[in-house]
Amino acid sequence: MNAADFQVALRKAERALAKTDPVWRSHVKLVGPCLIVPRSEGRSHFEQLARAIVFQQLAGAAANTIWGRVHEAVGSPFTAEAVMQQTDEVLRAAGLSNNKLLSLRDLSAHVLDKRLKLASVARLDDEEIIDELVHVRGIGRWTAEMFLMFQLGRLDVWPVGDLGVRNGYGRLFGLDAPPTVKELEVHGEGLRPYRSVAAWYCWRAADTIDPGSKTSRKETSGVPDEKLRKKV
Image (cartoon, rainbow, N blue to C red; front, side, top):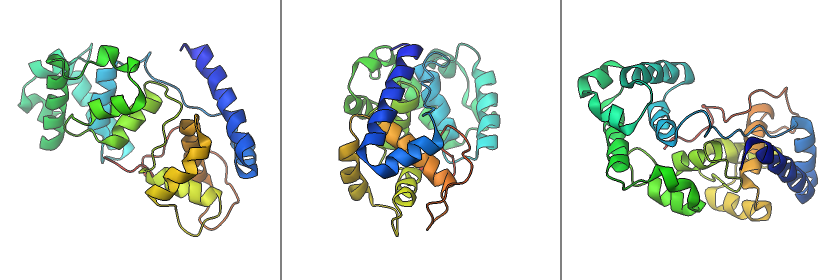
């Protein structure tokens, strides 16, 4: 799907979501257009997954600094072959912890020996892709779901383990507490086939609605807040 077609699909998803409930309709109108933007044209699948590994459990500024150093050390294009050509010492000097170094090596090994075929991964359905990715050290379901949403532009991903989505849903619907994972799974059934868009609007609710209140503050960013993400 090209960029123009994807934007058409997002507008269709917004209209469908707004029709499911007056709460959604009001929130979509308040927030405005969904700003999910697939990054596949700007960053390779391998580079995006490597970046996700580096960013885990780090604040945005620190993560960006370390990622920049790692990227500089590996060079462009950022490939599995180039990662494997660098020594552990060089990658540690760039700021990688031992666990992240092992994860980056494992991702590279999966790509090089064809256990993970990123060139054709977009042909698989969502659960098949998640199953492929979680075999890599350091990549769990949440990271795989973010890859589906923000790299491949999949529109029906429902990251029920994400704390921001759970908090946002609870605040949006005035719940006393965020829904559990199982409860959110049930709530998401009526939002198919556009649950990624619903998740994005839940992130916005978590950003803008005070706990215990339905009064939204000014909208901020168009991507999940790092503080609200449940890291994997």
